[in-house]
Length: 175
Image 1 (cartoon, rainbow, N blue to C red):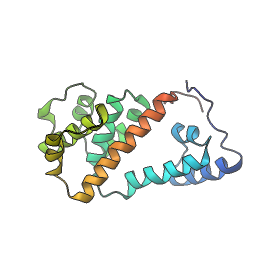
Image 2: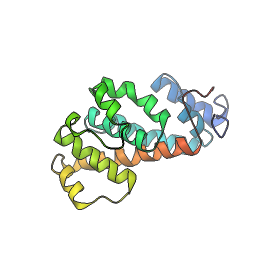
Image 3: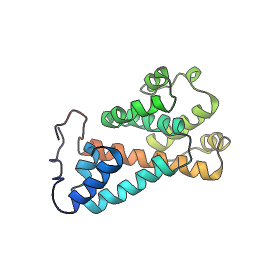
Image 4: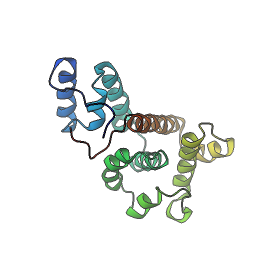
């Protein structure tokens, strides 16, 4: 159960933004129901995460690989619940999704590019600082623009999981 009640989506600024979110996404997820306590923050969040998920040219499978790994590292089940179907639709295999929950990843399930991305994700998530060797390995697979997008995606979804877990937003919560 969430630590705060979900926002009232039927009045004021929250209602206007909730209608926009619902029109664009089909519904207002628990994440946004919580964020809408502060419509300004919710709007900024929506703009940022829309850029990460829909405007970035980072490969969708790589994006979802990162998101799922972060969800597991940060013990954020709501994030994993929301993104598992997307990850499969983007081309991740069920065996890869299962492996992302393990503390140590079985290298045979991931190609060199994916392993470099996962090492980078793990470093940014677990210790914040990225060793030079980890950065060099991931840098070999991406242009500067895609590397910025990858880094921003990792940072963004660490933000998402931390928000969700601090406020205990979970899939099974009633509206």
